[in-house]
Image (tube, rainbow, N blue to C red; front, top):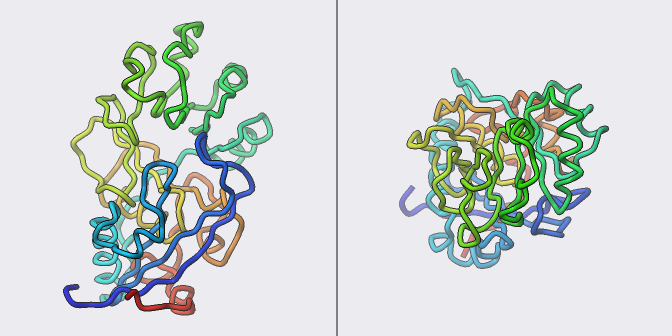
Length: 289
């Protein structure tokens, strides 16, 4: 890859609602990158501490996603040159339903699609979710707080209620208290905290086997980035239910449609490498200066 040029094609994703507890945005700019035969996705989240898209494009090597961008274009490019899909002979783990909004209708739709696990984004609605958990005991629950919860938020929950939670992700910043005092299984994503579950996002870090439980999720990015997350989960032989089906959170476009209806089974787009061959070739590409 040394000496090859990087090319960029910008995009915007549009969501129908807020996607997490700390971002009110509905429009999400990002960029697809190309070097040689390989493609990758750059989709920073400044709300979560990433540099802006413009800062990243101004100096890719200074961007925290840089190592994974290189890993993605290398794997994708090699497969495209060989004329094969990156998913040949790979088993992609099943996914939970990612639910920015949770209610009985949404839960029933998730159930009808075949989901067994649901991941609810908690935005000051924990008591409402508590009631839904009590009414939907056939589903396995994961709660994502993005650091916005309180140390005492499960104080009045019974032991049986707590056991219905598969895990609680990033409940609050570690300086505000000890996660183990919540008496629930916790999962660490953005916070570097010792926790029983580690959430890994291939957009920003490689998938490793050094943790007892690893859940791989997309970066809620472009379907190309989402597909790279699915590849990394398959490559790492992850056995946990993961969070790979996030294209359904955004308005449809040709790339999201190539991934299907977003049930628990990830269906890669047709083509070589990460797929999307014809769609990628049709995009306008501009050389990065």
